[in-house]
Image (cartoon, rainbow, N blue to C red; front, top):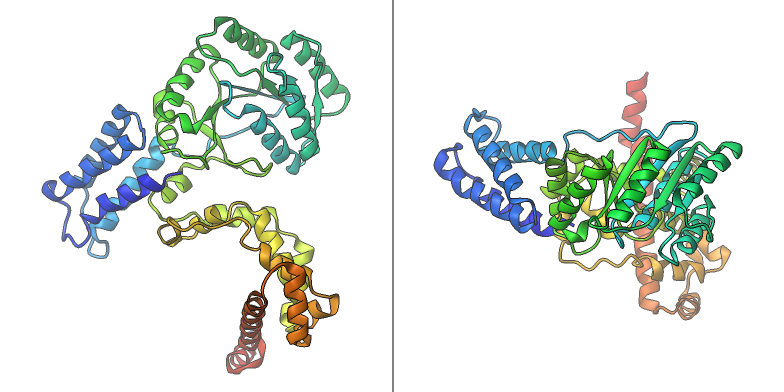
Length: 443
């Protein structure tokens, strides 16, 4: 999302590298470039001007420590200001009630219905009993879409297709939620234009009736600065709790994420990208700032890994690794776990230093597919005992997987390298000189 902004900021900050100290002269061009980068990213001009002035004032008042280079200190100041501009801390999300109600509002085409299903999936994984409510009574396919999405994530959908009274539908839905033991109700509403008074009156009435614990305004981040202006207009009528930024995987410059908190004075609570049910994240200003500055986001990467982490499978794998019995079944399982974590390029971008290296690379989400096909074309014996491979077996596997013998050989070579590494690690831990040294130190 922020690739262009990251490149521009990186170029601006390079002017301070190698400088002995921060001065009014050497900081002027850097500040100018940062402001230009923010405006080009579609950040509100007043916000861009304000933050760069604050950065300049703070930088000029800093004493540069001997152990810290001026460029490093300046990057920290920029990072801190970006975090502050985006809200400082992660905004709370507490839809607690009997049941808790979450009201979702936004413009037509902003991705509200898809977000509803993603939020329902996330809350369900946290142990909640969730009910989705279809209150979009105008768009013909809206109810069917919500039902389909609800089925995909295993969440019940309450709908009355022939009822054209959104408040009546929500009233019946609440009664059903109570009787069926649901802990959270997510209400999907009709997309509307801020200038449509009738529609605005309807959602205001819905909010007055439901008294939701959380009212979220969904914004299509691809609309840029217009998204901020629309959010301001909606907030005047709806006084929502927080903002959801959708379509962050699209061709967006990121200005909405950077401006919306300052202009609307409401926190961003969630970000969403892609169509997969699990492509939703809480918004963390500090992590987003680090990604904008090309510093990676290891915390989010670890959290994504934990979401697909199977403790029992991990214990089995660890046991096999220690016994040097890692095989192709285990490798296939690892491929599948990585795929569950999300977009490969996004995942690699979370590793510090990798963002710049892969920015121009076209990384296919199906990169593991040929390897999976090769492993799936092996017999159970071949998966467990790679030593069985010979020319005839390789030819058969290549034909069955739609790949070439060269690709089969490449996978076998990489697999052998992995097994060698595992053996070396095992020696380090218990068998070799370092292992013996560790045993002596324990005595």
